[in-house]
Length: 361
Image 1 (cartoon, helix red, strand yellow):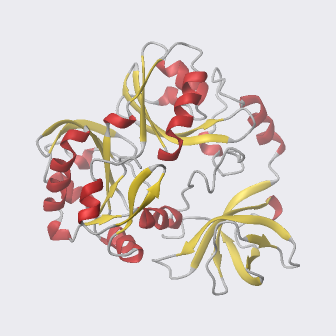
Image 2: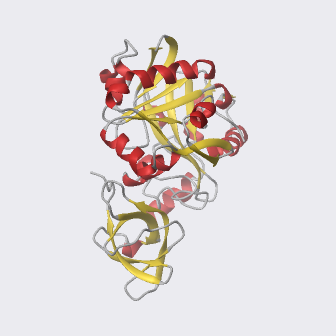
Image 3: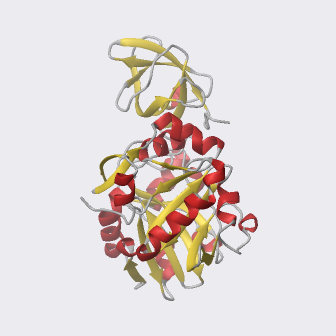
């Protein structure tokens, strides 16, 4: 298994470790619920160094990004971040990702850990305009510091005014005595905070400084288990579950990152434009359990007559709400909020209701 610069620290702290995307990663430390609540109420630190980072440079950088991603990167100015996806040629999604506008001819793409090789091969194969591509995934480390006390914790370690960095923007500056750290107001928890990018050789210096600065707030390391429950409470998609090579961005509720603007001829645009005009036959929805039960990936969703109408893609017991919550694809006629649907829990038909995420207000 691959390791991150923090793997030995996770093991020393007693984390439950498991393989994820080829990496030996911490799943939990003090327990998923405790870690989840720590992020919601205070501050927690996630090792996300397994994520992939590609640089796109040169005079054709923007042209390349416009061809391979669904969102309109032309609106980005240096310091802005954009959520987007790589559409494939058959109507599905290669991956969802972030685009960082670093300089006018320099961008960073941040992709999911499990898809690094797949995404890199996709980018190389679809680089028809001659953009300069560089895979820096193994030369970059990343921490996500999330929660209402994240900004207060990190501000102790930098002269950069973190309150002046709006959501989905970033600055580059000195942090904990380390130059050229990317300070990004992003994250996949819904609890607020920052993601920091830096070279692996300074990783432990930054880790130690953050934990010392956050000690007064009860800062804790957080594993991938709580990362999943936090993103699910917000209704954020997880690649491989809620979005895949077979799910269209329009089915997944990602029409807002699929921009059919003039001059942007991204992969499979014509087919997706046709799908938008004609409508989709299924939609990704959020739902809350009315009966007691926990939805799990792969469970069938039924109508009142017990007929299959879809399938659960993600589900859990909400640590904040103390009820079962889930996401899944259902036939479009069952996708309106307020619609009662049913979960097939190993033969038990349990009532649920379609709701519009986030589940955690």
